[in-house]
Image (tube, rainbow, N blue to C red):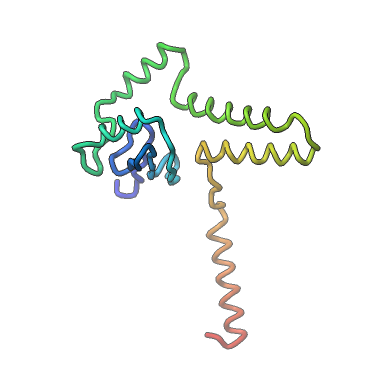
Length: 161
């Protein structure tokens, strides 16, 4: 279907979704869950950088970076390690430890307002990790139509047609 977005995740990255930036950074650019763009450059350990560079070698845009990966086998392996373990659990864990670390580190002392500010910053950090972005409201189109009608009325009233 031409209307479906080409979304990807960590196991389905394509060569054109990840760029190696010497000496050890990876730049990601893809549509993820709910067709939300993920664009980020991260510093990684050199072995990770070298592995991604090797996985990309000899492939063209559109080819899978992890072409040898069998996600069914991976999911079975994760469940063998711990019942219920999934990629989503890793994401939740990463978000949780980030929130916990920031709150624990920065809220020992301080006023209530300072603690609220720390919480808001920690929450923002977690949202960034999870690539949470504000969605366009369901009434956006209606609001825009009303605004455009009002602009047209004002233009007519001023003779600006």
